[in-house]
Length: 110
Length: 114
Image (cartoon, rainbow over the protein chains, first blue to last red):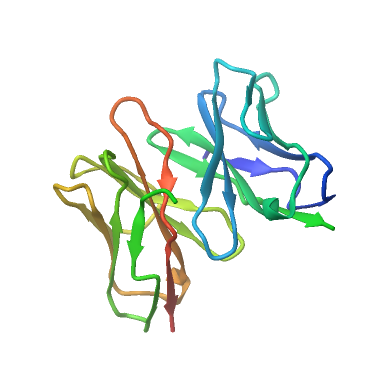
């Protein structure tokens, strides 16, 4: 079956540095992708989305890049803050629903 | 806050029992999806309800069933609970139909099966 995965299970960055979280997807027909942030004990929180007709989309301190050629998605967080510490999931719309990868834990070091 | 609420927040059951989890969708949303999230893993899709009809199902056995009500709230029922059913159960609401939109998640119900 189709799956969405992440390259790195954990990522540690210094406060103030930029973070890059990567994701690979396998379904070439996917046309909608979302990044979610999940803090301990909470449900996933929407961060940013992108459709397949775009290569880049920017939000507040976050940027998502989509490379359809290699089926790769990345989330860039500028000036990472302690509040950014969480698990980040990419999700790929497959049929009626989103397929989630296992997640990347982002730890922000003081 | 997404406006999606779930109850209860925590639940402890024993193997073989049945459980019902509830979800109220965000105002204006007509679609509810349910996910199971085991510890340390990403959410896995159970099923989706759109306008009171099942609109897709993941790889879960029939003992996982659901309902959606006219106000678009939803229930997830699990019969004959097994130890492996212990997980965080998440519901997500969206404005569905032909064009899938972003799903917004509730805080989840943590189920422990002993």
